[in-house]
Length: 33
Image 1 (cartoon, rainbow, N blue to C red):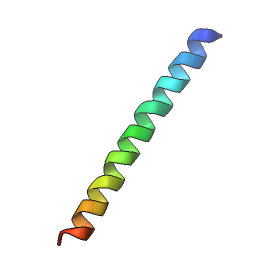
Image 2: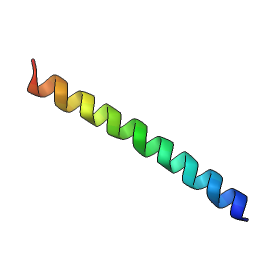
Image 3: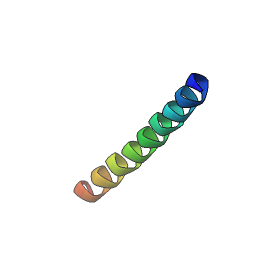
Image 4: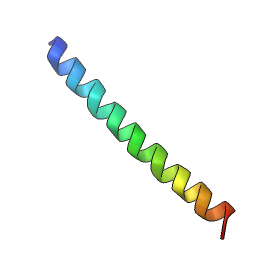
C-alpha cells in the first residue's frame, strides 16, 4: 500500500511540474510578444 501511495505521489509531482512549466512558458510568451 505504501508503494502505491509513493508511486501516486510521484506521478502527481511530475504532472504538477509539467503543468507548472507549461504555465510559466505561457506567461513568458504572453508577457514577451
